[in-house]
Length: 436
Ligand SMILES: [Zn+2]
Image 1 (cartoon, protein in one colour):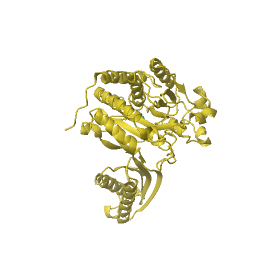
Image 2 (cartoon, rainbow, N blue to C red; image 1 turned 45 degrees about the vertical axis):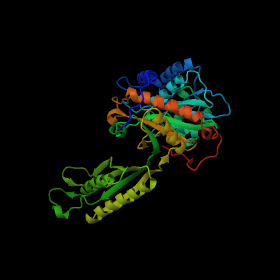
Image 3 (cartoon, protein in one colour; image 1 turned 90 degrees about the vertical axis):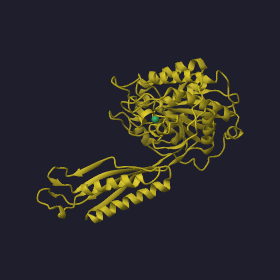
Image 4 (cartoon, rainbow, N blue to C red; image 1 turned 135 degrees about the horizontal axis):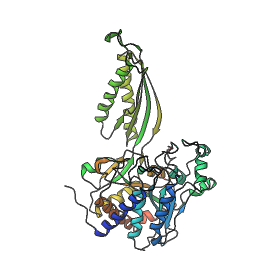
C-alpha cells in the first residue's frame, strides 16, 4: 500500500500559489482562443514581467539572456560554492495546457520563498527557458542549447513560417544575437534539477504523486517503404496481387505486438501514405514511419533490427521489396545517479514513495546533462493528459513536490560530495548534447 504524503499546510498554500501562477501565465498567449506561446513571441515579455514581480519580494532581479531565457540568481553564503540550476521552459505547443514547462519554473520560485531569506552554501539560479517545444523554428531546445553552447551559424539562419530568421527574432525581441555566447551556463554550475509534469498515465496508475526520472529514453526514427505493383482493383485476382498497403498493415500489427512483448519498449507507426491512393487501384507503394524508444540503447537497437527483419520477411512472402532509412538516432540520456538517489531520499522524507521511471519524452534536462549533472522530478498528470487545455496537476502533488524540493535543498547543502563537485572534471556521461 502506498504511503500518503505528509500533509504540510504551508506547502499546500504555496502549492496553490504555484498553480494559480501557472494559470496566470497561461493568459499570455499569441492566440485569443487558447494558449500558444512560441519562442520569443510578444507574450513572452508578459511572462518575464510577471515572474519578475513574483521574484521582487525575494530581492532578485532577473535578466534575459540573448536566447530569451530568464535567469535569476538567489545568492548563497559562499561565493566559491557554485550554483544549482533549477528550471524548465516557458514556451508551449499550440492549444497548450498551463503546466507543461511553467510548473518547473514556478515550483523553484516557491522553493526560494520557502527558504524565507535563509541562504544555502551554494547559489540557486532559476532558468526559465525560452524554447523547448520546437514549434516556431521546427528545432527544439533552443533555450537550453544556448546554455551549453550548442549552436552554429546555420542555427541563426533558420526561418519560421513567416520567413523570420532566429537572428531577426532575437533582435525583434530586443536582444542582441552577438551576446549569445554570454548565455552559456556559468562554470561554477553544480547541477541542474527540473520539475515537470509526467505527460503520461504511469504515476496515476500507480497512485503516486512523484517520480524520479532515471533516464530520458533514446529514440530511433525510420522511414520504411514497401513497394509492390499497382494494378486494377477489379480485374486482378486476389492471388495475383502485390499489395504494398496490405503488407504495411500486416507489419503495423506486428510492430504493435512485438513492442508489447518487450518491457519498457514503445514502438509507433505514426504516419502512412499509400500510392497511388485511389479507391479502384491496388496500392503499389506504402510509405510508413517508425518511432522506437527505450531507456536502453542496446534494447532499442535490437528491437529496431528485429522489426525491420520482420518487415523484410513480410515483404519477401508477398513478393514486395522493402527499403528503410534511419533519419534520427538519439541515444538515451542517463540522469545523474547521485542526484537521483538524493531525490529519492527527499521523496521519502516528504512521505512519498520513491519511484524511478524513464521519461519517454525529451526535456531540457537532456541537453543540460551534456555539461552538468542533471536530474528530473515528475509530477503525476491527471488522466495522463498533456499538450491539451485539460492538462492539470493535483494540489497535493504540487505540495508534495515543494516538500520534496525543500528536503533536497537541505540534503545538498549538507552534502560534502555535492559541495565539492564544483569545477570537477566532466564525467563520462557529459558528451555532445543531441540537436533537435
Ligand atoms: Zn515540457
